[in-house]
Structures are given as C-alpha cells and as structure tokens.
Length: 220
Image 1: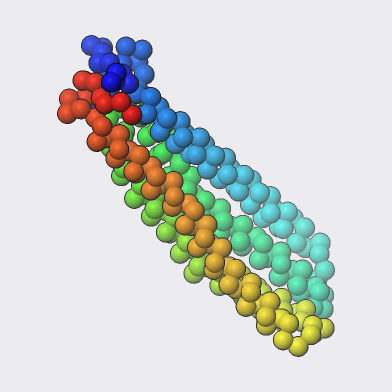
Image 2: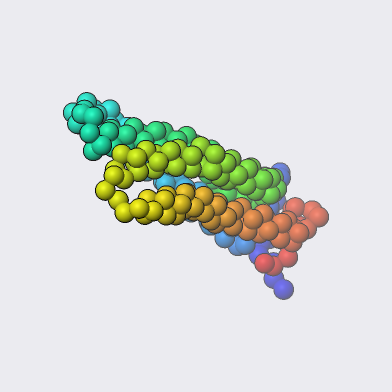
C-alpha cells in the first residue's frame, strides 16, 4: 500500500517530510476540521462581545430615559435593563476562555498542517484544556447565571403576578428554572464532542506514525 507521503531530505527536524512540503492527507483533514471549528468559535466570540457591548452601552445610555415611577411596570422595565446588562457581562466573561482555547487550537492545527509531530502531540493535551474550559463554563452557568435568572424571575413574578391565575406563576417558574439548568448541561455535553473526537483522531494518527518521523507512515 502506497504511503500518504514520502520522506524529504529537506524536512525540518521534528516534522514529517514531504516532497511538496505537505503533511499526510489524514493530517491535513484533521487540521482543516480544527481550523474551521476554531474560526467558527472565534467568530461566535466576536459576535457575543459586540452584542454584549451594544446591550451594555444602550442600557447605560437610555437607562435614565425609561420610566422611573414605582408602578410594577416601571420597576419591571428597570429590573430587566439591569438584568440584561449583568447577563451580557457574564456571557462576555464566559466567552474569553473559549476564545483562548480556540486560538490555541488554531495554532496547533496550523502546526499539524505543516507536518509538525509535536503539534499532533499537543493536540492530545489540548483536549484536557478544552474539557476544563467547558466544565468551568458549566459551573459559571449553574452557580451564577442560573441563580441570577431565578432571582430575576421571582422579582418579575412579584411585580407582574397580581393579575395571574392562582398557581400559574409557580408552574412557569419551575419550568423556567429547569430550563436554566437543563439547557447549559445539554449544550456543555455537545461542546465536549469535538475535544473527545480530536483526541481520538490525534491518537490514531500518532499510532500510525513510524518510529522514525523521517520515514513513511502507514496509509490513513
């Protein structure tokens, strides 16, 4: 079976040599997927930062222009503004570790594309870093964002629940509280898929490497 690449006398030490300066096809595929996902996460981070800054700025500029009375509606509007600003800050802070993790993944992916063996080994270590970021984000959502949401809901029900049917607010509050817990857990589980796949993929490529990196690898 023909190998994916051939050794090159001009290969950089610590890299897999190839006549055209290209890594094996399987390495390029892993690198491409990692680059696309890292870039998508960075774009998502930029979007969340921009929307968060807009939310905070607009809330600060127009906060004094809203109703300032003591009626339930006035209190609800002001409380909603403060809540949205606070949640925007929390989401922006939560996105920073993901952005750092994506930048690291991007650097690793570019190294893999150049055929750097050490980058492929670093990809295995990156998995634990990524899972740690997801775990930290989940804790932030469960222990900070979810209680903040629950507190806001209680205040909202207290301000606007006078005309509600008996028992209706309690049911909705339970449903909203469960959603504030279930959705972050579900989303965190989804985020864990790629780091695990990345680790398994990198392990497979490392096992397929020859003992001598300058020699041909097995086909993938």
